Image (cartoon, rainbow, N blue to C red; front, side, top):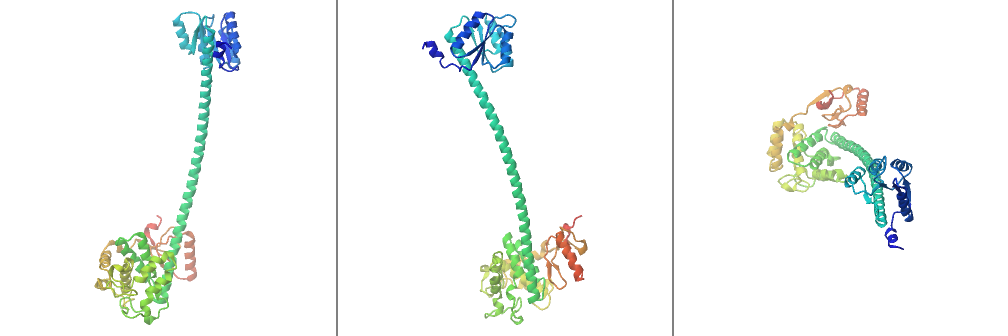
Length: 443
């Protein structure tokens, strides 16, 4: 194999098509023989018009054209090829040394290379091979770029689809979470209402003073908030206030003593009721902290209380708060004294126990609370059952005439509940006293 054959053995595949354009038949014949001998498919055209017709007919990888031709010279042809077939490689064959024309042709047609006549066959084949390799590389680049753009577009579509699915799923989860929160809120409200009903039944059965536990729970809750207790502690103190008397179920009247004058000695049934109350509530996880408060709410700050004889800070803060709230309401309601005391007299009695029966810090907060706006009544409106609407919020507990709790305060009415209240009133033949928060009445 000759050196020329070795140099051109890696030429473009035989499928590469070269168009040779020249108005001299002998030049065309020489070019076509050279290219065909080295595996190229060679087409020939004797003019620019004929070349354009061949380019219209089939894909051509490279055009090599003479510069000097009648009617349409090489510069004009190459300009046409650049505009209509921009990816076809373009070589200019010139036998003239007029650089001005050559440069113009290069600029107008964006020529890859120009070759002077007479040409060296070895150089010609190398130039052609390099041009076609460049064409192949450009084709690969465009193919890969198109593939990349296509894949990027697919990726964008996939991402958009995933994003839409994520948004949809997020919306579903948010909706489920909101529904769960509503259900959880209703469950908590039902739980609290059940506790209030239970406390109400205890009072009707054991003390005959309906509303005492609810008032104690509310006052203890306000005391706890003013003393800086967190939400969970306030909630536990409120529950303990509602259920503080549960241990007295079944306790004989003679063994109950009074709120402020309980026996200090011995182990009588009355002194055991706080512990019995704790034991009754311990199986309920939600009430375990409240149960501990109930156990200690009859302890005294000086250590003379029961059931454990705890002293000062050893008494849970919730129990120290509950003791003040319970005894204050007992004095106001006449539970402790058999006759209701005026607020100032009841307050003085509580203050008298500072440092002995009660925690001085709790007493200071108690006095501050009585003087603050926290004791101001909530803005409320009395409304007939027939005028109740869903969304209204009870400002007070709704009681039957016999003192039985029907609905707890702060309960938000719904349509079904409004209908049940209307039915209850019509069947019981008496008027319910319903108070709702003024800010819950739609304008």
